[in-house]
Amino acid sequence: MSVGFEQILVQTVNGLVNGMILALVASGLTLIFGIMDVVNFAHGDLVMLGGFVGASTMATTGNFWLALLVAAVVVAVFGAALQISTLRPLLGRDPLTTILATFGVSLVLQKYALWQWGPSARNLQEPITGRFDLFYLQYPWYRVATAVLASAMIGALWLFLKRGTYGIWIRATTQDRIMAAAMGIPVPWVHTSVFAIGAAMAAASGVLFGPLGGVTQTMGSDFTLRAFIVVVVGGMGNLGGSILASIFISLLEAYASLFVSPAQAVIVSFVALILTLLFRPTGLFVPTPK
Amino acid sequence: MLSLSDVHAYYGKSHILHGVSLEVGPGEVVGLLGRNGVGKSTTLKSVMGLAQPARGHVTFEGRNITGLAPHHLARLGIAWVPEDRRIFRLLTVLENLRTGLDRAGLDDRRRQKLLDKVYGAFPLLRERRHQAGGTLSGGEQQMLAIARAMMLEPKIILLDEPTEGLMPRMVSQIRDIIGVLHDEGVAILLVEQNVPLTLAVSARIYIMEKGVVRHHAPAADLRTDPAMIHQYLGV
Image (cartoon, rainbow over the protein chains, first blue to last red):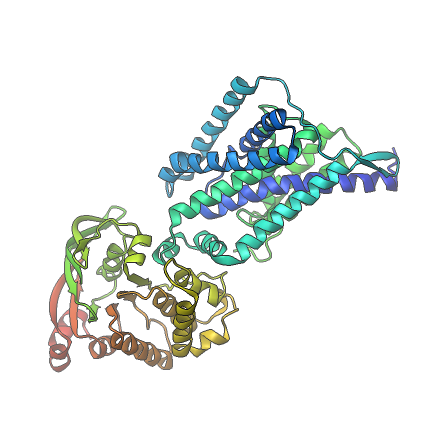
């Protein structure tokens, strides 16, 4: 079987688009891990919840951009409540307790979604319907728009962290929670806010992904797994690393699916995960392992 | 102003403080001496809410602050300069200072004034303000740790072994800044291994042994009669 140059370019575009949506999910996951040492196993379910809230808003208003905003805000508020009720009391305990807690939350959210929205997939109408010629196929502009939007949101997060008082508070708390508190930074609220920001970004990914893959109550596990692979490959808690790893993993999968079916292409992600854990457990994109 | 009475604290399962009582008056510099591992740092941490007292209580300006979260204590005017400095290594020098400077109720003009004051005391920090905290030398990090605490405009600073591992030139700079803070009316609870420095800057001295205060005397008495120092510190 021969693979043409054009096919490789198309898969590169696909990989970049998928990579940016994944990066949006993973950057929230890595931010949360970095600041409170919590691996949020319910993160993908926040993506799912965002997708459904978006779909419901869309069904009532017909406005995709409003749906995106509503989903982000609703899930952010929900995330804040979840952090206060479930994770704040477990801070500083054995990591196993937070793994089990977030895993439990994940199950509850999936069953809630099944009860509330039913078992069938919801498809969101894409807000941009145009297509352009990309070699042998008609490529939807919407896919390009999702990558641009996801990049913009990640860029906004980056600026938020780099500039301004709240960014300093978040970075200081990530580096040394105790010293940050001793400097008067309200650490419990910084944790809650970061969780809410991560939840909002997950919800936004869910809405952006809606027109591409549909929203189902089980989609969360897949997102959690992929985001988790990316966070490990990129270096736990390292934002830049997670973004690079998202693109890296998505490109790998896109190229692999030139040769095997997309379902089998996921295998390369696991291989990358295992190789990273074996040979560079601090992450591929960490310049100097700590 | 700050008083500990019969404070007991544990580190995991080991009993570190066996009923520590001491007092620091407004604007007073008080030294806390003792050998390694007698609980001096833990005493400071128990004030800062980092080592929960199992028994006894801590009061500040007449208010019981036992068990209050550290960020509330910082707002009340208690600053902590830990033994290991705990600089935010990936934050720049200026960002390290801003962790204490960016707080409610402080307008831009006052912020700038505070910064200028600290830069005046430590000109090196102004030069290096855009450099990551982790790239500073040990002595520079100590300067930054003290400067960062000053950003809170504290009423009292808990100063834990500020001269440990520093060159003599840096030690004398630390000594100067303790003098400046004292002149401004900031109280200091100073934990030190450097006995001559502690005796020189403090008004009163507490000597700890095995988790309790064994001796308490005006620094002037210990300067003229070092027998006590010999007995408890072996120097």
